[in-house]
Amino acid sequence: MTSYARSISIEMKTILVACCVGVFIMPLMSTMMNLALEGIGHSFGVGPADLALVNTTFIIGSVVAMVPLARASDIIGRKKVFIIGIIVTAICSVIAAFSPTFFTLLAMRFGMGVGSATIELASIAMLTEVFPLERRGWAIGMQVTCVYAGIALGPVFGGTITEFIGWRAIFFFVLPLALISLTFISKFKRDLISHKGASMDYRGALLFSAAIMITMMGVINLPPLLSGETGPSSLLAPVLVIIGAIMAVYFVRSTKRSESPVLDFNLFKYKVFLRSCIAAFMNYASSFSVSFFLALYLQSIGALTPMQAGLVISIQPAIQVLLTLRSGSKSDNIKDKRILPTAGMILTSLGVLMIMFFGITINLWLVCGALVVLGIGYGIFSAPNTNTIMSSVPPKNRGAASGMVALVRQLGMITSMTVAMCAISLLIGSVNTPITPETPELFGSFISVLQLAFGICFAMCIVGTIASWFRGKNPEGISEFQ
Image (cartoon, helix red, strand yellow):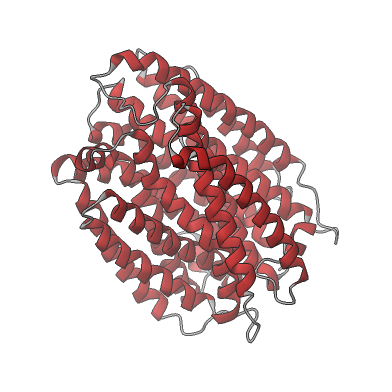
C-alpha cells in the first residue's frame, strides 16, 4: 500500500471505493459492447452504421443529462445523485439483456448513458471535495485508473462472453458492481451540497437537453446523407443541426439572464479551466474511435476471433492502468501543471499518426506499437488534466466543473464517432455495408477510411497539444484553489 493510501481517513476510503467501482461500470460496458457488435448485428440484422448507434446513443444520453444533473447535484446533494445514477444504470442493463428489438437495445443504452453521466459527474465532484489539494491528484488518479481498468478488461471479457455465451450475457456484469458501489456509498454518512436551497433552472435544463438532443440527432444522420442516401432522416440532418445550433444560442442567452443558471458561464473566465477543457475535448475527439475501428480491422482484415481481437485491443488500456495512478500522484507535486498533460497529448498524436500507416496486410507489431504509444499518452494525460480542471475553480463551482469535465469528454467521444461514420460514408458509400473477412473487396476502401479519419484526428491532437501547453493562469494569478 502506498503512503498516500495509508494517510487517508476511513471516510475518504469509503467514498473512494464507491466512486471507483461506480465509474468502472461505464468503460467496462462500452468496451465489452465493441466486441459484441458483430453478434448484435447478426441478431438484429443491422450494419456498421446502425451498430455505431449502440455506443452513440449511450453517449447522447450522457451528454443530454450532464449539465442539468451537475446542477441538480449542487442543489440536492452529490450522494443522492450518485445513488440515482447507479440504480438507473442497473435497471437499464437488465432490460437491455432481454431486448426483443434493436430499438429497445438503443433505448436502454440511452438510459445507461444518463445513469453513467450521473455517476461520473457526482464522483469527480465528491472526490475533489473530500480529498485535500495535496491528495487530490492521487484520488482522481485512482478513479481514472479504474476507468482504464474497465477499458482494459472490457475487450477480454466482452470477446470471451460473446464468443462462448452470447452478447446478452454482457449486461449482467453491471449488477454485482452496482451492488458493491451502493453498499459503500451508503456508509458515507453525509451528503455534499454546495448550493443548498437554490432553485433549479428547469427552463435552462430543458433548453440545454433539447438543443443537444436535436443537434446530435442531426449529426448522426449526416453520414447517410454524405453517402448519397435520400431518406427522410438523411435530408432532415442539416435542418436538425441548424435548429439545434439556434436553440444552443438561445440557451446561452437565457442562461446568462437567469438568477440560478443551470450552467454558470463565469467558469470560462478561468483560463486554466477553459484551455484544459479544450485539451480534454481534443484528446477524446481524436482517439475515442480507435477501439471501434480496431475491432473491425482486427476481425475483418486480420481475421481474428472476438476474443483474440479483445486481447490485442486491451494492450492500450492495460498500460493506462499502470501509468494513470502514478501520473495522478505526480501531478500533486509537480510545479508546472502543463508538463504531464502536454506530454500525453504529444504521445497521443504520435499513436494516432501510427494508425494512418495500417495496411491491407495486417502488421500486428505496428498495431501493438500504436496501442502502446496511445496507452502511455492517455496514462499521463487524463488524471493530471482532470486534477488541473477541478483545482482551477473555486469550491462553490466544483459541481459545474465536474459536469463540464464529463461533458467535454462525451462531446469528444461523439465527435470522434461522427468523424468515423462520415469517413465511412464518403469512401465506402453505404454506411451499412458490412466489413467482414468475406468482403475483401472493401479492404482497400476501409484502409482509406482509416487514413482520412485519423488524419483529421491527428489535426485535433495538434490543437489539443497547443491548448494544453498554453493553458496559462487564472485571472487571480493562481492555477489552483484549495
